[in-house]
Image 1: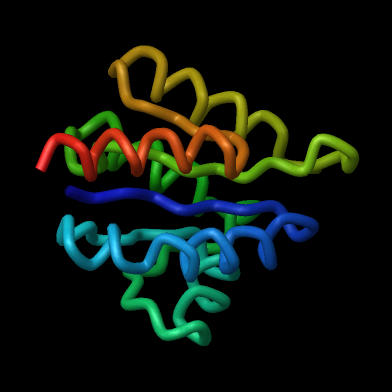
Image 2: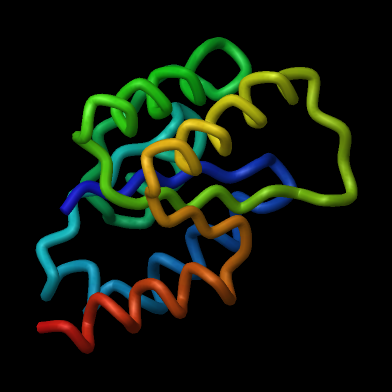
Length: 124
C-alpha cells in the first residue's frame, strides 16, 4: 500500500512524531511512503524510506494528486496547519478534491491518521 505524507511547516515535527509512534504498523503492513520534498526529507532523517516528490508549493501536492488519480496512492496523510496561510492553497484544495473524487482516505490531522492506521492493522 502506498501512503502519501504531507505536512505544512508548522506540522512537520508532528508528522515525524506520528511516523515514529506508528513505525511498527508501517513496517508490519509494508506501507510504502511517498512525500512532498521537505516532509520527505524530514522523514528520511528520522530513518524512514520515502519516495520524495517536489516540495508542495512548487508542484509536489499536484504530483501526489496525480498518483491518487492514477490509482497508485491508496491513502493520504496531510497534516495541515490551520493557523497559517498557504500561498499554494489552490493546490491543497485540488489534492483534497482528487481524494474525494477517487474515494481515497485523507487524514488532515494526527488523530484521524491514527484511526486509519489502526483500521489497517486490524484488517491483517
